[in-house]
Image (cartoon, rainbow, N blue to C red; front, side, top):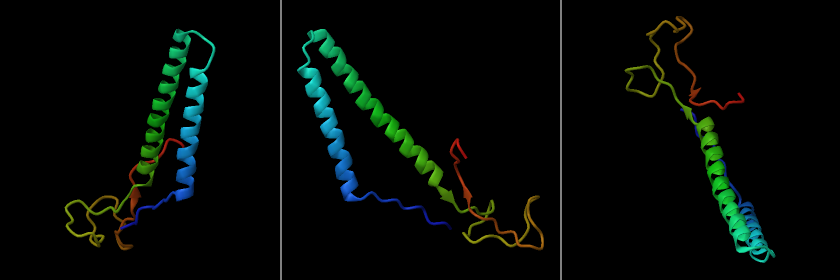
Length: 114
């Protein structure tokens, strides 16, 4: 069976990403707060900021889910087989008789650009 792809994020990259997000959010919020406009305009801009932040989290989750789906690999076994080892007896129209019938693992999901 194929091993899953392990990706790891370094601590420095994680800290940089969190600090960048916090600094940009606080900076923009302070800019909106001290902007010389009416309360209605300030409220509209603050609501727009919250909308952008929540939609960014949603987009990041969707991208992460798509990448996880693309990296999932399944070891294929014959229907009705109880063992994880490939079968050596022909059991279907796609079997290659005489050359072994073991099939290689297949990717479950493919991304749109593949």
